[in-house]
Every structure is written in structure tokens, then in C-alpha cells.
Image (tube, rainbow, N blue to C red; front, side, top):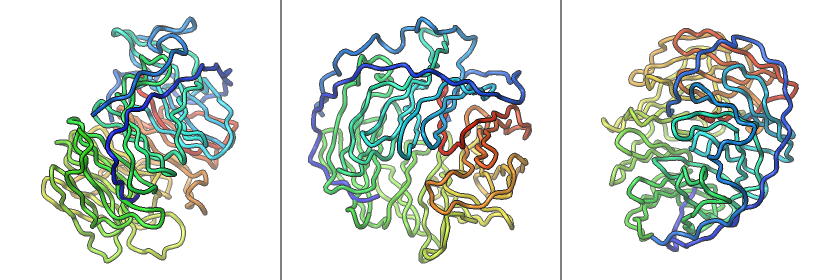
Length: 431
């Protein structure tokens, strides 16, 4: 990611488009359909409101079924579209055919997924939601609602705001997360411009402060801070190759650098890696812990994408610790997550889920889940991926065209879904 320099906040009106219903394709599912469902838990001038398209999303659809508790669903990309799976049985309940390399991110409202396409961020309705204390499930729907963006990139949800970054222009778009549920079209947005286009990211804090990366098409250098009026109030350009972001307890932001991490808690602190080249490129955080989990690469000339160490960044102690993994255990950027007790969760190339203590990096438990695997030739290539929600790890196994749900407390595989396509990227909506 690279520098974002601003031109201030630009009021924007985004026009919504009518939505179309895709017909779901149901596939076989294996495993324990008796998995108990718990209540869901969370791992300037403004623009005018969007134009009318259809009835508000929170109105139960005619086909909606009332549920006893919120129900998660899983979005999986494949070469040719996006599947939606029931989070309990891992049965496929929806299939939307789409072209191109697709990425998926939760929109943060428990119902929608942002699908990155050539047009921008397209809204996929996963078909689960809670309204007035009652939870519902309906058929998934790939809507025609698109936040237009040139080279759509990162989606960041923090507090009650969702922020979208367009790499091709450096434009940043922010909206109130829950407004996507109510909007007839697209919600009101706030927008900022970067100094130059780059592969970047931005976080909006609860007081309206915006943290955004600095950079150009050729290099990325740091992070700047804009106040709620859009004025720049601080910047730090000591974060080469800035990439990856997260917010820990106390709303402290952490950004990855090629020589450590950059921390912002009202002022910047640089925590330096022990190696001259020590890149953290992805950051995994919880709002209950001051510790950020990051990936780590100390060899700029390494071939492939597998890594053999992680970083634990204690923002309360201003400490960056590099933790080597056990012999034979490697992973990629898709294989890190955080558990319900703030533990680090890692899916290794040995096929095991490893739980690590967030303070020491000690291995707390290891559970066999998938067959041993090798890293991809290109990062976009399908390889095992991991997401965690409410104590359940969802693990893809592309070599077997399968996805598994694993209880992190016991290691038990609660369900396995067999697919007729090869899963690639994964996102979880909470319902």
C-alpha cells in the first residue's frame, strides 16, 4: 500500500440498480447436521441518499424462514462464480455465476458480502439477517448494487463504518455499515481522494478520523491521518511497502511494513523487525486484545508464498515478537485467524489447525483437518484458506473440492461440505 494524500471529503451520490435473483444450486453435504447454532458474535459533508430500487433489505422476503437464532452463511469463490453455503450443514444454498478472478469480504452488517469485480464492489445478499430481534433465512441473491471502483481492493469494517479502497484511483469510499441493510439502492457515502493511485487501504475511526496509506504505483511508504473535516493532521512515511491493517483493543491501529509494523494510537510508533527485511503484510486483530497477529517474511528473494514464522505485536508493551513455527509447518496469508479467546489460529501445510498463545506463541493445540498441501505458484491460485466465527473454524480444501467446519474447543470436524467446484477465497456472514 502507498500514500494517500487527500483533497478533503467529497459529497457523493451513488445510484442503486435493481437486483436480480440467482437460482441456487444445491449440492451434497456431509457431517454433523446437528451442529448447535449459538447467537452470533463478532470476530464533513456527506452525500445524498441512493435512489430507489426495491423494498428495504430488512423486510422479510416472501420466501424467508424464521429462525430460532442468527445463522451464519459462507461465501466461497470458484473459477466462474460465488457459492453460498449454510453455515451449519455446509450445504450449498446459492450459486451466482460470475466471470473473472473474484474476491469476497464481509460487508460488516451480518447479511451482505462485497464481491470484487471489474466494475467495483458488487453486493451479494447472503440471505440471512436479524430484524427486530427475529432472525430469518432466505435464498441468497447477487444484487445489481455496485459501489463503482477502478481496481476494487480492500474492504475494512471498523466500528459502525465500512471503508472501500479503489487501487486504480486511490479513491476511498465510506458508509455507515448498517445503512446497507436499509438502503433502497446504495447508502449515503463519504469519499476522499489519495495523492496518487496505489494498492492501499483506509480505516475510519469512531470519531471520524481517517487513516489511509501513502504511496504511488511504484512504492508505498506510510500512513497519513485526516480529521473528521478532511484536514491532514499527521503522517508517517517510515513504513516501506505498507500493507495489511487491523485495529486492536482501545482502537489502536496497526499497519504492516517491510521492516516491522506501524502503530497509531493518537500518535505514530514504529516497531522494527529483528531482520533488515522483516515484512508483515497481513494483520489479524480482535477488539478485546492489544495484540495483533501478523504474517512474517524475512527473505525478500524467497520463491513461493509459504511462510514459516508469525509476528505477535503487543501494542500495550510496544513489542514486536517473531515466532518461528514448528518444523514442517508453513502457511500463506489465507491461513491465519483469531479464535474466541484471542488465540492465534493457523492452518499449516501439514494439514493441521494450530492454536497459538497470543502472548508467547506457544502451541496450545493442533488438530488434523485436511491432507498436507503445498503452497501455490501464484497467490491467486486456489489453496487452503481459513476463517473463524463464533468458535468454529471454516477450512477450505481445494484438492478435495471440500470445506470443513471445525470446533476450535475440541478439534472435532462438525461438518464437511462436498462441492462440484474448487473453492478459492472464503468469507463468513454472521446472520
